Length: 309
Image (tube, rainbow, N blue to C red; front, side, top):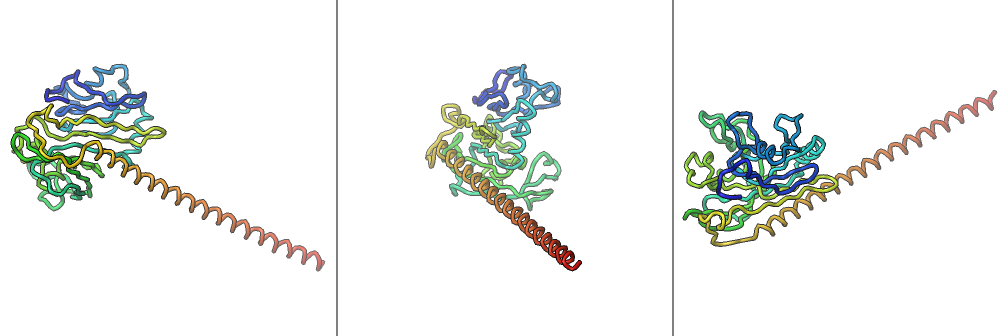
């Protein structure tokens, strides 16, 4: 990831198999577009790099398993066939996918770990229909519950102003969720022109990066972790001053918590299935016993009638 603009050739690949490619999406580039003037998209980059993998039965040639905003960089999963897309879709639908984003946010976030729980809806206000908003604000329509886990990694300066490097884990998948949640707590993402009311336009990009992706596919899960693009060696305007925890250990702990939660969920499902099987077995045994008793009663009646005759 560099400070240079995207080109057809600037497609990074984080993972590749027969079923999936995970690309390192550049900032300020769309995933796909029907507009003739949109020459640089991830879809166009994929066609340029892997023309043999394009599927003519799909509109764009590739099946994107999820979305990333135009301004967001990082891990983007692409399925290479219909069956693989279906497997990934079920994981996203069941919310078993784990994603984590790196961000630089304005100001110093005091609470080191927190859960952001603002409901988010569509903004219907004039001139803001391209935006989302939190419940209770003017023009907010159809707000839905949303959750984001925030963990502070570092404090520092960006171009002389105080900022905080954070790891964000979305537990739900609302449009612009991370950007809206950060803005809602008074710490908008550095370079987020939209959710700073157009004030934050100096940085060369919005500082939000999809760093980590775990999709619990069977039999082998897909696990991808990219590089950290917010380093002084890549952007000298970012000056870290105090580190609280490393990115690697934080992501490892996040994944371990998620895997433990998944194990508990699977155990609960197995226990429910066992109890249901026992219930069905008990019902069957009761029915069998009742049937035997009924047959015995009928047999006794027949023998009694036969003896009388």
